[in-house]
Length: 358
Image (tube, rainbow, N blue to C red; front, side, top):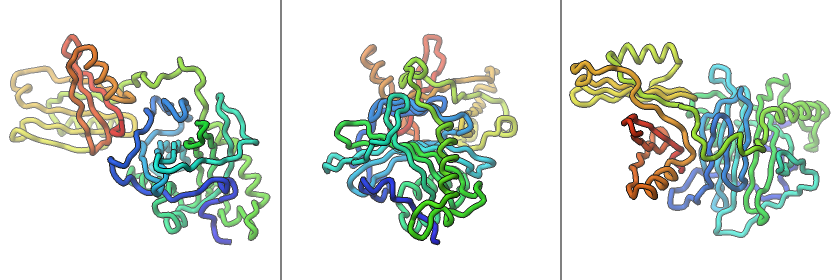
């Protein structure tokens, strides 16, 4: 039997569209404030929710996309990997129809379950990445595979998935889907054996699905207490800058000791000023060599510290309201972030950053 690209039984009640990459900033809708803080996805609306992902997963980033000309989606991707080989995925997908149409999500929630005050319906299916690339090269699955490859991850062909879905608004114009995925190879079977010729689930797939569903429920939890996390909370430091005396020696040390990879290297002023950016999934370090400082005997050491925030624009707005002066924000297209640098009363540099989408 040919492996399934996607099992359609659960989604027959809603139109299924092919996703497309973002067409342009002018067409892109304004998205609610969403961010990831310490493995907690925080969404300010549609829905207002906080979901904690198991610590075995690492947040690797987000991307957004048009779904043909009718809807828009945003995905936040978490990975559990072994030496860049993906073992499991956890994905948030926020999706909503564009204001140019009157379409709705018409799911049946009569069998839905309540989790953290929200009603979710759940199902499982299995699919082939190779089939997805052929049948829907611009679909969410294909875009996610490309996104992971761009981050250096390897993804197996056959995956099995547990999905939790909810519709947050009375107008039924938006939806949130939580995807938990594992490699089908862990079962010792091909997904071709999961369904019979009439597209019915086989007995062993029903048993596998029960176990998959149980594991998926353990991979996340709805945070019900607002005191546990706030969309305005600043995350623990993720970034720092260091003035160094020897760039080559320091670069090698941070790579070997902290496991960081070089993102870029820049030298200016006849190589008298150099900057090296190093990072991994959880930490970014900026090394700065300034020959003028060294010649003057100025101390090397920590230069500035950085924090993740949901939206640097909101902080700039707040400063402008209080001081009538708006601090500048730098858009770093390469790293997909917006940067706001501030000075505290003692002239220490505090760097705040948020996703470029905000």
